[in-house]
Length: 203
Figure: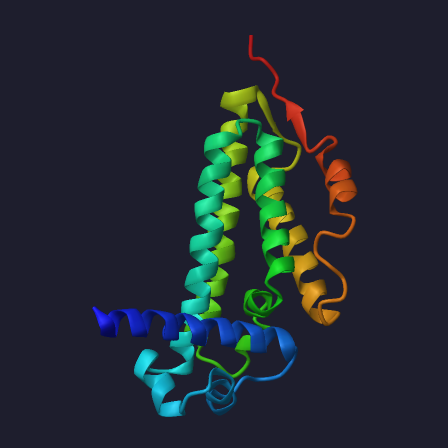
């Protein structure tokens, strides 16, 4: 009981410290020596909780996945409008990135330079999964509302994910100065106009 209680906070502390370092040092690579110093433990103590630095990054990626996909599930349960579903999912991604600059460096791959390819693949799979969800929403639009995207579904979903990807990349590129949600409300209103059109009724 005691050992579990001690391990859980320390593991969490390591991940929080890693995320803070990613935010504080944009463009820099994080070493386990620097991380151990910030946490206030030895490198050996770090490795008692995580067998490698890549496992620490995986811990942060798991947090991103759990947070985003649990909230997407809530959005789908609460919102029935196709455009609203898309807007809320994209806004969720942008807001999450804005509130978690360190984790955003993982989403863009900026913090993964020189790290194992497995981590990059996992980030790629994260965005693929979001894009698949958007495709599903757009496919259901015809049944739910009698509408469909002006573009083919694959192209329409890709356009939406590319918008988010670009805003997040700009956030990292500008050293977190240009926030992902800046002007987003007005931009979405423009995108939403004519994004969906009424499906023709077959005689």
